[in-house]
Image (cartoon, rainbow over all chains, first blue to last red; front, top):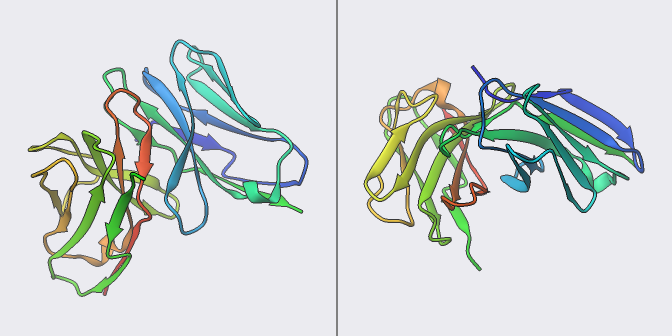
Length: 111
Length: 112
């Protein structure tokens, strides 16, 4: 069964709004990562948060991690049309193994 | 600049044929991975390697094989292609310290 599950499966917002995507997982992890995929392209790493961290920022991205609930959220602030893409969370097991991706959230940012 | 490349980018083959997809990285990463991506399933891990001569099965390894004879390359072989293996295949590599994965552009494989 999949380790990471993103929610929602699809999200449509207006430019300038914030977008929030959630990821739940089942077993203990070393770290959790978020990736972005533009249509027809490979995935690009966005941000990594370790199991002992609760929040991390990178530009317009904010990631939180709640290990007690086994969940993470990715917030994109002031979204732009160029943020339109699929976003995936991936979990890494305690010994660096079991790199597992969720099915992704498809984000559409309308101009 | 370091990069990870895949070839071919598109491949059409027939059921029963052997197919090999190439992956080459110049990051000097120890870890390399093969995934397939299908609608509704996200990315599923096929095989992975943590170094030369090391290979491991992933979630969906049946019908696939890999070998690692050097650091740069991890070719993926479909022994006898099946229509269920029609998919987009991604190769990735990572440094064993950071875990961040770098992805290739993908190979779209169609098995008729």
